[in-house]
Length: 436
Image (cartoon, rainbow, N blue to C red; front, side):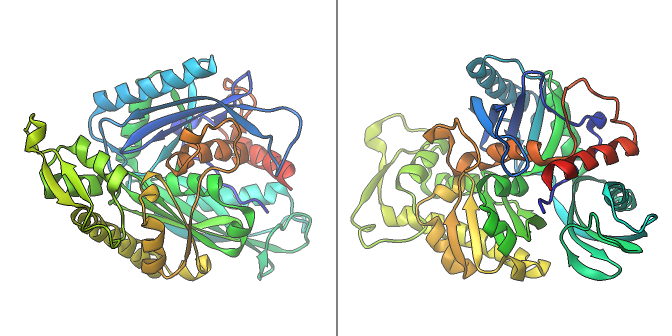
């Protein structure tokens, strides 16, 4: 069974929209970069319940006005979003009006809600599933937070647990455990307002570890258990997948930008040079040649190249390694405290821009005591090498998310079913028919 999110909060009740020309757009608003993918749904062959997606437009821009995934400067963030979207639109030759947004801020939290209900006709159908999950959503109202995802993780029929697909089965009571993912309402509203100022509508929203997992995990990993660690610029997000569904997510407010700031402060060099040094010479692990290899470090406020300081590469490694160790320790502690760490087994997939740092995978293997690989998007066509790496996993996963969400619509203007719960159930039924 393909587990799925029931989408974002209301966001004016808009479902995930597919344009009249079969195009969809994804917008990843991160702390280090803002990226936009525009894709076309290819007609014909259908794989894994949804049509293949080909990327036709790509735009990305250095992030401004975003810190730890949260908007801190509305004007700067709006300008960065406009530039990224405009570049993607020019490349694709289309104009978009709805975007699916990936978020890493807002302190996402997980909670599992279990509900049970009687089955009227004894044979379980689509309406029973939709009614039950809708009941779980209506009963979960966290203070000051909005529910982003309601993901069914486990069904039971007459108290027999472990049912993957209860449709067509007979029973008197149907139960479901729903993984609720919520985030703080304020940061979400600010992000939505910023996007609306760019004359765009938020058609759907997904937390970054969920989108990244959809982009770079293979099906066996999702079924057997795996932890996705999305290492962004301002946050590091954690998602645990088991039996095809994300069962837990969390985040820590440490990312690649913190490493850059540590280098800039520790070596008294401008942030731009600190980022360059991290990319070209940075490593999470020491090597025997580090003491002999010298690096030029321009000093803050100095314009004369001769005033540059010369340091061994080991000093740079000594700044990077402790920060990465702290990050992986916090991820490990969150996994252990959640109680879901055992479901991830011994498999971890690193993704996100900061995961490309030399030695990050090896350090994660040692700190987490698990098998670690670096993941990148595997389910899209049309991505160039420069935009097909781990740094773009979230944006690529948002396109996959748009295909599996039951809140999709044939046209962006089809609002006839938006406001009613029965409309949600009908859309959920359509998704069930397409995915089973």
